[in-house]
Length: 156
Length: 430
Image 1 (tube, rainbow over the protein chains, first blue to last red):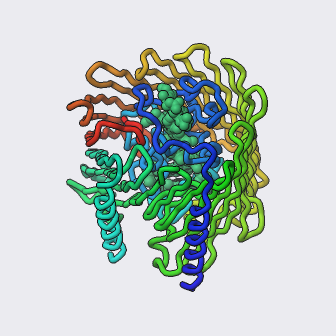
Image 2 (cartoon, rainbow over the protein chains, first blue to last red):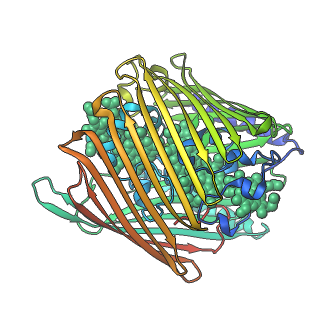
Image 3 (spheres, each protein chain N blue to C red):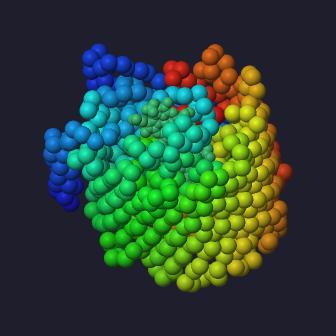
């Protein structure tokens, strides 16, 4: 049913057009890019270190990159990924979230060991246990035909 | 094949478009981020003999246009592997275009549009699409995002015809009080409905910097809630506690249709449900010390008994970019086959002209896997930057002795090249 697809496309496109034409002029808008600062170059820094505990224009404390941020950024990212994109290009997220990157993130960046990255070490053995205990997190990243290519040799 | 050509044509077309318009754009920039990785290791040839493998990878990111401010810009990222010696992974495709899209943000920043291959993170959407995406700020406190296109994950499943993904999110936010969002996603493969999900996102700020975050997802194909995840954050000076609750119903969370994958297909239909209750806790005794603890308790309706997972992590920074970290973990599965101990220690030492790193990780399984209880991984590495930091060379060696690798050494050389010394939208990776 090609028709439905085109209808949906048209619908979304016209909706967008409509939205754009009446977009409001007031309210806070995020910058396209965060200013480049030396301390922010390579390592995670708490936002509150520079921005304080201000709740406006955004709640800076919410975005503090804690030591376990890799496991716990999802609820924050669901809220507004736009905040992440002022500092991170999609390629940064793609290291760990990709349809297919082949090299696991901890190998792709082997010397970046200060980063908290899933699947360090002997993951082939350990994944059985983590996969049995909580498959919900795996499914988010490996739950499609493409993102499970790496798994096919053993899981069919 | 026509698809690839189409994509190349699209990228060229966009580049042309930008070149045409860039003369009027205030600041155009060209940025290339290239990571070339050479690895060597031995692999089993299957007949008891070991073959040397020597794959070379290239991860390339290109950005062009107005990268720091509103305007038009093009962004692309992909990777490619070439085998310099044996035929490691021979029958896999040897590369992937992860994204290639054109973006426009007007001077008012009242909306944003993107066209091309891109990754969408909007509530229940965490998918790669070939299509269009737009986000607009309507009222001062309402924004709407919408997208439509082909789901890239289904590219090679029954061809492209009849594949479709679309959806969106509407968010209402009062920056110092709350955000609420409702999102929707529809995916079809060959005209048949694969996924249809409705999701809600919530954040609420209470007095004393206490906040609540939540996400729920409703499966419209099966008519059932698949997921509820809620987290409370309670900061108190040097301490912070973050209790959380998660509930997953496998029949509604997992999927056994074409947009799913084998390791997970069997989970739908098991009627199982999992409830996770736990907490993260942080302690910051000084600016250069971090302590983090995470405890999780898993409860199932079926199959497994109650299990726990503990992680303790300490990080000490003695200079702004130099740190040591130690981690202890215990997976306490109800069944012996689901238990292990994990220990890890690492150091990253930043020197005037480069850096040195080392990592050691040891996992002990209560029940041996392929006759091995222990798994040791160790790596050392170092690197240096040249030409005003535009070129960096990193070399690392690692050693594995576990169920899958028997005293194996691997070498890795990574050469990163950056054209454009400014990193605004992408923090330098090391």
